[in-house]
Image (cartoon, rainbow, N blue to C red; front, side):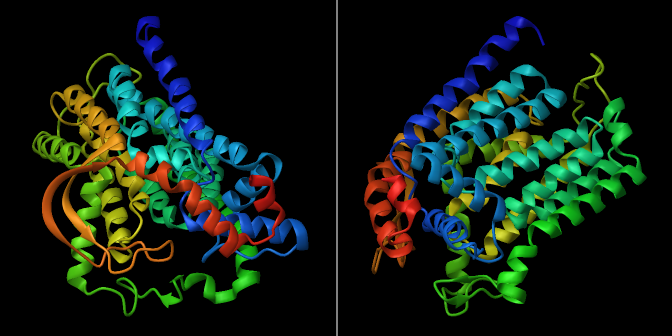
Length: 415
């Protein structure tokens, strides 16, 4: 990578960190789970008792966010999120650069880093960017031939969000079959090393969840939402399967925004048709053999994330793994740079002004009930995703301080 290529990339991450940090000065965030994690830290700090914020427990971010908030309020805990978010972009950009080159890496970082839901995750005290960072760092370690380090990083990933575990197993499976010409990746693909890394991941990951098991027992594997048990598909007594399907499709489109989703659909179609396109190796200037097994692995990762979301199609940030994998997928398409520029531009626009195709109807909208009860198809432009989040953050924070944190020391230090 030449100095000329490196200059723009060296500016992107600091600029995005400043953006995330400045937005984070507006408060902890709008997600009630943020305040549950602060409550977990408060109970641990004041009483020495670990009570997970919600099943199955999110031990690493619960402790990290709580400790940072205790030390410096939301400015400190949100700054930590901003650092992890930039770490996600750095690791993801490195992976894209290995496969597709420096320009693709820069544009991919912009496409992800400007996504409004990623921006919100990076500027609020939530666990999404924690898990994403350790997952991408683990993939990078695996690609670099550091199998055991990948096992430790993947354990930290599941300590942040347990739902990444199947993606990690998929990553190890892909590493064992990908016909790589990269020497470091080939060294990492040794089955004995992969088995050792997998065992390390399982061992350390289990240790992280021992406190949850001690606190909750088997109930840690039975998540609930508003006291409704979550079944195999969705929430008992919640919407019908048709309502799930509508929410599933609508929120997948909303992750990108309608304009960017259309760009993505075209790029994905082109990538599928030309899935045997050669990709330059990091160790050789010559095109290497087709890497369609990697394409299959990325597609399998997207299918898993989508299946998980269909089970509980509520918060759009649940789909952030799809954002990373989808942007990686764009790079397989012809004229990928043009698609990435369009996606990045549309993502930035969606944060300020959102092009929507469904007008939502709320029977009762409150902090505890944010799901629409219905809607009608109508193309319109509304307030952007980031704008809307910032406009409601102060009131949401005051509400959750009262209803969840009460008089805890963390709540007082965050004001």
